[in-house]
Amino acid sequence: MGLSISGAVKKTDIPATTIRYYDKKGLLPFVRHDENGHRDFTKHDITMLQLISCLKNTGMELSHIRDFVQMCQDGDTTLEERLALFEHQKTVIEDRIKQDQKYLQTVEHKINYYKAACAAGTEDAVSNEDCE
Amino acid sequence: MGLSISGAVKKTDIPATTIRYYDKKGLLPFVRHDENGHRDFTKHDITMLQLISCLKNTGMELSHIRDFVQMCQDGDTTLEERLALFEHQKTVIEDRIKQDQKYLQTVEHKINYYKAACAAGTEDAVSNEDCE
DNA sequence: ATAAAACTTAGACCATAGTCTAAGACAAGT
DNA sequence: ACTTGTCTTAGACTATGGTCTAAGTTTTAT
Image (cartoon, rainbow over all chains, first blue to last red; front, side):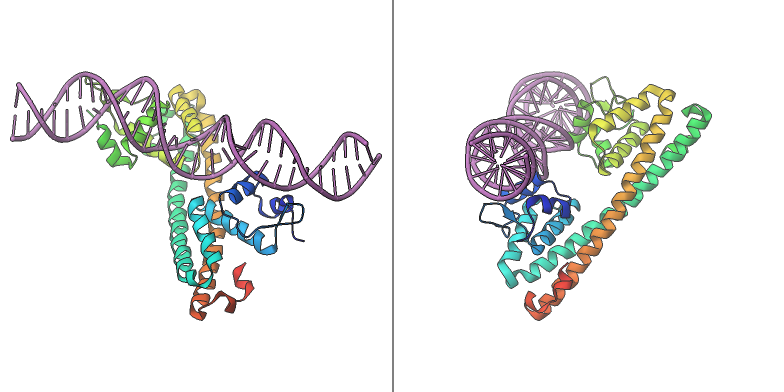
């Protein structure tokens, strides 16, 4: 016996309704049910859920994740394709980090601008330079 | 005369349909129209569009962005609130960068795993350690 | 003058990712 | 026996962020 759905929720931080939704959408073809019809999550299943969470939270669509899971089910013939998928996802994440670092600068600039404006009591006292 | 909507698209990389959608949703109350009814984007408007893009792409909802824009319209009484908003958004971005760096490790681990598997021709040859 | 290009609006429609509802099964505790 | 808690399903519904359509205006080029 592995984990129930509430156990899986605790391990993955994915709500039960969302796990069921993923299952319905074909993202969890590997999850088995016990004699009562309840889902029975193995260690492997939890690892896959965590990986699904990683892919989703880095911008991959559920339909694409479903294709990846299917590749896993299809075995060694899809190894190269899965490698390519992760190499692509790596660049997606790296690009997002780079972009977020730029956004962080913008926001820090705004913080300085508003600190100056708050201190002066009015925006008019702060140079336009600080606004861009 | 400032920029037309197509000029604003070039400066901001936001599609015209999306700019109109933002306007309809109340995110662009500052944009004026010329005698033909066409939107006329000033430098300030473009700067605001870029800021809206920054906030949206770092996870802020349009309804929340609309509230921020309204604060800007309301003048100096909202300075503290706007400062707080950017300070909060800073932590949002920092948290996402940290999380993305963790996801990057997961993905890099997977790349190593699949490189080994591809070299061996089968997943079975690769240790489970590399899979988690 | 007429056709093409760029703009406008309201409102319908769509995609993604859930989220909720209703009806029911089963195990454990009182 | 019966209530409580946890689980199941199908299918309806919602939220967000667009995206498209239709009908119309004005400017510019041939």
